[in-house]
Length: 68
Image (cartoon, rainbow, N blue to C red; front, side):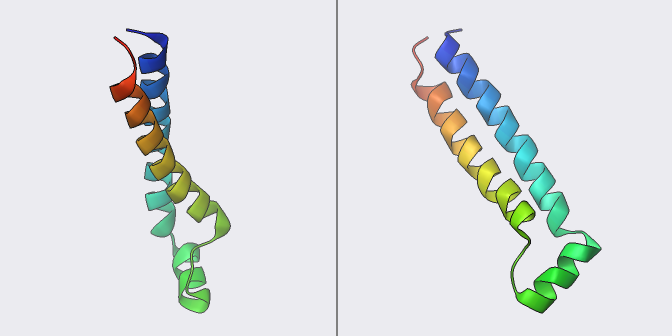
């Protein structure tokens, strides 16, 4: 496996973990109260969600486009 594909796989896994934490954070009581009062999630939760999605997309592209 080439280093680019390996890096893509690592970034992909990190993205899945970040997204998992973000989804779990949206279900917390404090986050539900914050969303009810402000209409948005906290900055930390948004970082997890957006960062996870970006890492999944970027890691997937690196993994699929890396030379084998």
